[in-house]
Length: 148
Image 1 (cartoon, one colour):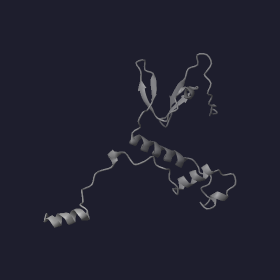
Image 2 (image 1 turned 180 degrees about the vertical axis):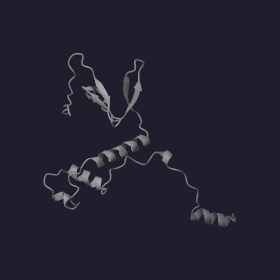
Image 3 (image 1 turned 90 degrees about the vertical axis):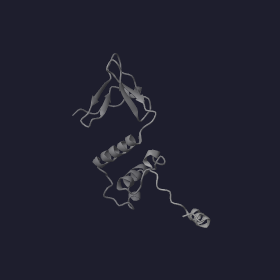
Image 4 (image 1 turned 135 degrees about the vertical axis):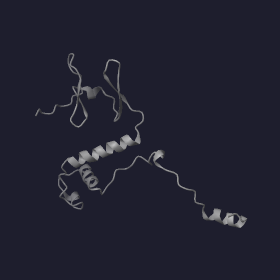
């Protein structure tokens, strides 16, 4: 197995090609400094030009389903990684030598004791309307007017 390459922000020398590979997990791995040329964005729209080249454009809007999918993938990836502090109780985490605050929070998230802050309410399409139930004042006024 080859050693992992260091990422370098400098441009490749000469006419070195930028390569990408579809991995076993259906992920696109970019090789040869291509990440240095990408804009600073988390989501990209993938398209193909007339010459058959892949074109990545930063996404203006990400659908809620894609965000949920990404969170599920993160949970699966996190479950595959061994947790070095899984054997330590939550109360003892603070007393472990050499552990950072970030590692404590990651361990507490993995245990389900702490959750990530949400960006706001879910999109309106996930909220469904409910039946109108009249309040006490409305019922009182209807009864007072003789309406049933």
